[in-house]
Picture 1 (cartoon, rainbow, N blue to C red):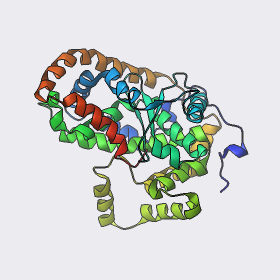
Picture 2: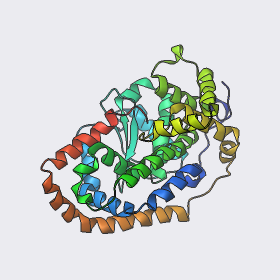
Picture 3: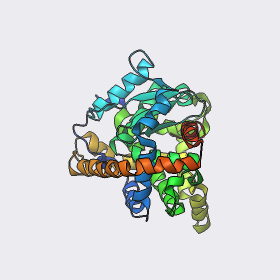
Picture 4: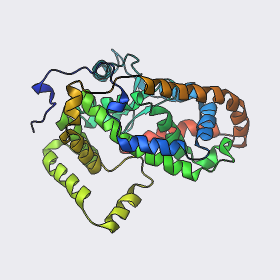
Length: 335
């Protein structure tokens, strides 16, 4: 399949000062705005941040995963460095590989996000697909998604009943809004993965592998894209309801849907315009994101002692937090 943007067709484009607005899906922004308006959401974020903190999250992986570098997974380290150069992102995040057969990856953390790849993803994907995956996660980092992604993973892994310091907050609306945003944020990061790789075929092929889990000698990308169109165009109102119910508790959209959405973004010409230099540059929206993090950190110091005192109601909360957070990557099959 010969598509615009394949690396063999043109030199790699470096996107000078590109802003995350350039690739963020409108549904991602809408869902995030809705999430921030849910009563009690900001309060819940500040309390969770205050309890776990940046160092606690990082130590979970520093202690039981392999930190990539020139001597550890040098190919992955090189792909991340390449991705940061392509996206003109100087603050290269740390990259870890954790042992589990489940195909998954994540960008997590609070103040200084880092990227985690499951060994299952590293084994299944070819180098050009891993470039897409790493670009996808870097897109999450650059969009400021890691904070809310981490909050979502903690909430899903632990359950609200094991977070006593959230007492007094209506939590179910927050959970549903977090999941809705989480799914939509994936559509944005898929675009970032394409911008990093500049390889449309690899960017679509990764969805096929995530859906089927097999090698390409048994699967066909064109047939999968036809399946994606069938899913998107199928049925009437009843099918529309089923599609909503099928993903209501999921963290990721279906892979056929993701493939179709990304393919449509390319066909609409937006991708080509960005390659040609027509994109938003970094500016006010970056300052606003960091200002929001400053507000959270300021409030977190207040909640930190209070949250730890309340955690005494659940004697092994800290151990369960570490076990549940790290196992969350092993229990999901999406990146």
